[in-house]
Amino acid sequence: MGDAENAKEMQISIHLSPSKKKEHTEFLKEYEDIFAWSYDDMAGLSRSIVAHKLLTNPTCPPVKRKLRKFKPDMSLKIKEEVNKQIKAKVLKVVEYPTWLANIVSVPKKGGKFRVCVNYGDLNRASPKDGFPFPKIHILIDNCTKHEQ
Image 1: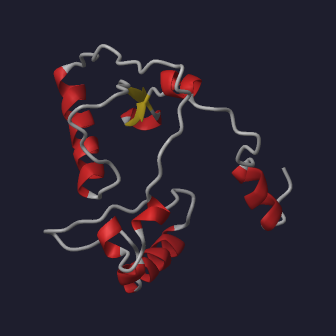
Image 2: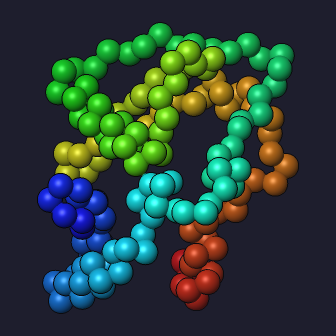
């Protein structure tokens, strides 16, 4: 979506028929202006709503992991993905991090990969939540009357 200079990425299910895929694509292009691609697209939204801080146990010392090295081709792909998220203002560059976690590339079917971050040390230092998030896929299935 978007134009050649400012392309926007969207994914449509591969399980749709070609006619349905075309119908969905036309619908998304028609209403392209209502999507928020970055924080700047959400005018009037307070930063206090979208920004948050993680609480950590003060007795747990910060952990800085040694940086991993990747193969040059994988390093370029990771850099491309991270830059895409920085440009969309999903990520913010921090110069002197207290905690440092490594990026992990997870292979997907079809030769693609997913960029993840190993937050194991930070998770151990975070207080446990007495009210965890529900299993979202079960809630969605219940809303759509789908049987498992």
